Picture 1 (spheres, one colour):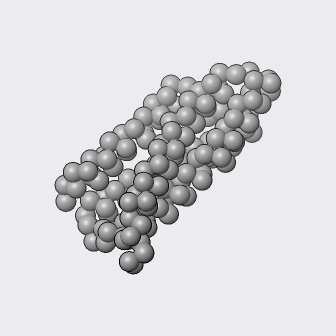
Picture 2: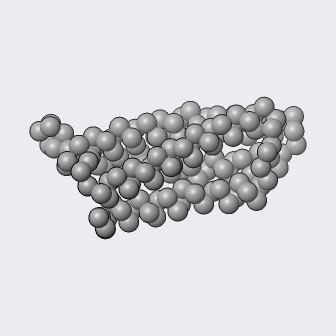
Picture 3: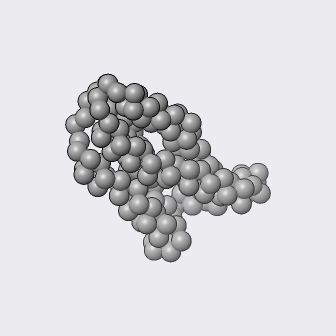
Length: 146
């Protein structure tokens, strides 16, 4: 535990860095979906969107999700925050974002198979999910209302 406490600022910095990467990916991927769906099925453009989406998932989104969780848990352990109500609420919203991440990955795979179940408008609306979650999470962490 002493080691974690001595590394607290580094853990916190790493956590914030990977949250930024993860959130950037969560904002980008639905926008990619909109452009993907606007491309002609079977076209070279569609193939490029499939490749871009896969790279974003594999190179940025999923590694950032994993590192966000690992560094976040270590940071919380370092300061003994697991008994705090604000952290419980934050974890609930991070779980929701993690579920959203999983849904995005699944939708990306559907698009790669040629399925297009949602409209561009619905995808644009879903793009607001990470922003709303980020507002709540930041307020919980900074204000610690309970």
